[in-house]
Amino acid sequence: MHRQTYFRGMQEGIPVALGYFVVSMTIGIAARGAHLTPAQATVMSLTNLTSAGQFASFAVIAAGAPYLEMLVSQAVINLRYCLMSCALSQKVDPKMPFYHRLIMAFGITDEIFGLSISQKGKLDPWYTYGCMSVAIPGWTLGTLLGILSTGILPASLLNAMNMALYGMFIAIFMPAARENKILLPIIFLSMAASAVFHLLPVFDFISSGMKIIILTLAISLAAAVLFPVAEEAGDTEPDGGQGPEERGKGRS
Amino acid sequence: MRNYMYILVMAVTTYLIRVIPLTLFRKEITNRTFRSFLTYVPYVTLAVMTFPAILEITEETWIAWVGFVAAMILAYNRVSLFVVSLGCCALVFALQLL
Image (cartoon, rainbow over all chains, first blue to last red; front, side):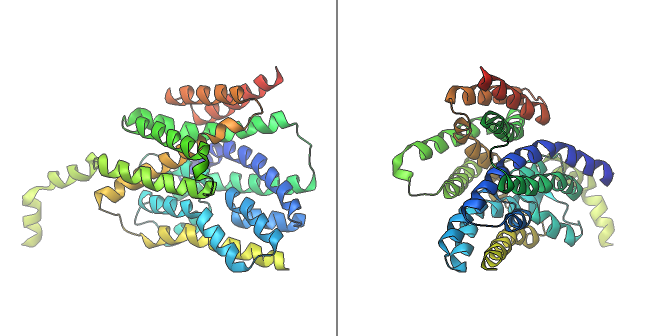
């Protein structure tokens, strides 16, 4: 059972690995700009697994800034993982052994999270492990290849592979929008708001990582207050079925 | 050596952000608004990250637009993740060769 779930995770993680491979090649190229060695860049990708965070780190390293600055910038840029971690904590079985939480946490990225959270019912950690076991090598090897060699692949192919990554995002949120009618306007509103933040020069002082956090918090909170999600039918049915008779027996 | 210290600081910070909520919230949260909030977070985040960034991946914006619209329509019609992803990838690659 776990084995099947694991392989499904691997299979569905292939587009992620492919996209990661391309994005991390650009990370590798940028790492060379910050005078990292190929070994350092590879270790960084293997231990961090965060595109925005790693991109931001090169400026900090190149400037020789204090470690505290590295800590703060990473915390802010990667704050969205904190939200994803909250969501995942509700997606797993509360009775799942604790160590799974420690391992799964390492694999929380936009894409692996997106795949994991869209699973039906409770999340089996082995699904996430399947995604991780193709995505992490893709990310790490891409970085290595990027720093070792520039200009192997034509730009048009790199662009197209980038498209695969966004196509995967879209394939996660659009089917959900079809099932839950309120999601469709929320998604379009999110895109519109994001475009406004992107286009208006007034917001230029906010980093792109911060923009994502601000928009996510504001829109999700408003949606939660205005359109609270109905409790799952499964939560109430067994309770109603038990009835006072059963409870009475328990007391006597 | 200093570079490895930077990498260590990064890795620890990023892991803590990822692991703390997942290990802290061991029970199911019952607050309805908070649960709803967590339900909406992933979709809003992905939508915000996708658009308008997706339009900047090709030199010619219209090609990215075509890829974007195609992916939206395919995904809304429940075409599988793999096909949507590689389909719009192939489409964008082909259009760039024109």
